[in-house]
Length: 311
Image 1 (cartoon, rainbow, N blue to C red):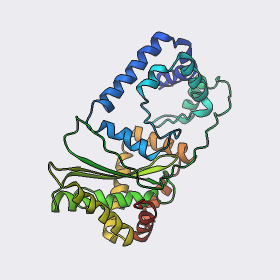
Image 2: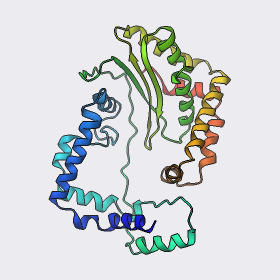
Image 3: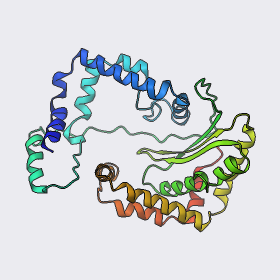
Image 4: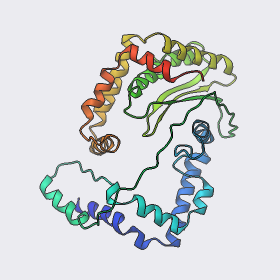
């Protein structure tokens, strides 16, 4: 444990002392190769960039994926990297979370040994971000030679993580896209046999979220017919409350997946730190689960009607 704490302390306090042009060039190429492997040279990789471009205006921090653009990566200088590090990689902007079988008092002494001498600095200021708004439907066609199936993808702005409506949209996503029982899954994959797969999810994020419906069509399938079914089912979800059984199934699956996930020690650490980061409350686990338990079919309907509007 002390070795791990020393490694993090060394990285936080003295990484810049060893940063030079050679090491920057090396890591720049590592990141660019990661982008090629995971974004540029994979099916539907282009689509991810296009969705963000349509959802967020220039200047919004979510417009570009965190992997960055090749041209920006190439332009980044030593001074850029050093300035970024000095602003953000500081103790005032960091949280250390430990989980495991240890003596708390003894560990605190070791933490103080490796981190206690860092100078106190001000926490970096955050920019005020104006919420992105779409007033009319935005659309684009992406030509992707690596993608073998036609994909239809819808996305809406939605409430940020842990905000009212966030949990309700998780339940709505389950009701629409759950494999086997989801309304869209049943109609598009089983009944009409238009789609190879259906994915629906609430992508929760700190500033705002996005609700996604993704349909991969079978070869030769009628895309207009598939799109009409999607619009029909979303409209129905915003008009009539889901069945109590649909709501219960979603809540049980969310809760059971959450609890099973806590078997892993690292996940427990990440859960504590996630609540601390977003809410300043590492002990928020009970309230988190209660969001889903309190979500009624009527609340799900109202959130869908307010969020998943045709415009």
